[in-house]
Structures are given as structure tokens and as C-alpha cells.
Length: 227
Image 1 (cartoon, rainbow, N blue to C red):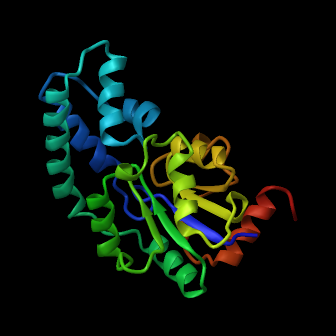
Image 2 (image 1 turned 90 degrees about the vertical axis):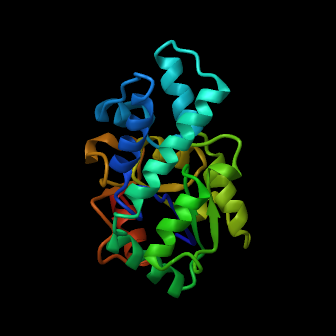
């Protein structure tokens, strides 16, 4: 039985993974480090900014100084802010979140993005003042694929909830793995990846259009062979 919903942000409330990729690619391009869309999907989605830059440089056998990291982070953040401002929220996710809140379900947003970016998306979605908890890159020591972000979201919701009471809504394989490692049900949305790329998800959907929490719970039960 679902008692709480924990949403990712990018690719869930806004179709923004390409915007993130372009912002990362632009910053890395200033130091002649390529980052293709396919590489981004296969290796780097859902990492926070600092972890991604460090991982990209490590994968290419290049050193990354703290000073250069700071320059790359600033460039990426400035580019992304401009791109996010042009993207509309995903209406189906917003409607589902509003329904869940109206029905009294605790709702958290758990993202590897920066708080400023997440709050900007939620403000444009009309949900910033309504969700019960927000967890961002600044709030954890280990980001996805570690389960810490989801478990932090659970802790902030409180109310005697356990991981088994929660469903995670994710668009990335790394986020799905983190949700499962946290002991939660996980629904993968195909905003960014094809349905065949969600190993471990309890249910894969194109979006949340027309769903209630009870309806989602029923879909998960049926997907797991519960009739």
C-alpha cells in the first residue's frame, strides 16, 4: 500500500535532461572535453554537478583542479538557468502531485540538482509551497545511485513512514537503482529513456496522466503479478 510519494525533479516535473546535457557539454567544451548525448545517458544522468564533472574527468584520465571545477560549475549553472526558464512543467506529473497532496499523501521531491534549480521548477509548476519536503544536492553527502537522497526524503517526511510505504517516481536508471536500494517501490517514467532501460523498476510508464494514487498502486500490483 502506497502511503507516500517521492518524486525526482528533472525528467519528472520537467523534461530537462537534454537541457542539463547541453549545459554540461557547453562547460566541458571550454576545456576540450567532449560529452555526447549517448555518453550522458549511458553513464552520467542523475549525478549531481560536482560528481559528474569529477567522473567525466576521471573517465578520461584527466586531472581536475578545484579552481577549474569551480569555473565549470559556474558556467554550467548559468547556462542551465537560462534553459530551464524556457521549459514548461510536465502537466501530467503536476496533476498527479496535486491529487496526491489533496488526498493527504505526504509528498517529497528528491533531486541531484541544486536547490535553486529544483525550487525554480516547482515554483513554475505551482507546487513549491505545497510539497512536504525537498532534498537536493546540498542536503546529502552521497548522491544517487546511493540510496541516501531517497532515505533523506523519507526521514524528512516523518510520520512513522517506512521505506516500504513509499513509491519513487524516477526517469533515470541511476535514480531507479537508488530507489530500489532504499527499499522503496519505483516507477520509471520514459521521459528520457526507453522502457527497456529500466531494469529493476516495479512499473514503467510513459507518464502519470489520468492516474490516482490508488490507480498507481493497482498498476504496480498488477505488474508484479498480483492480479
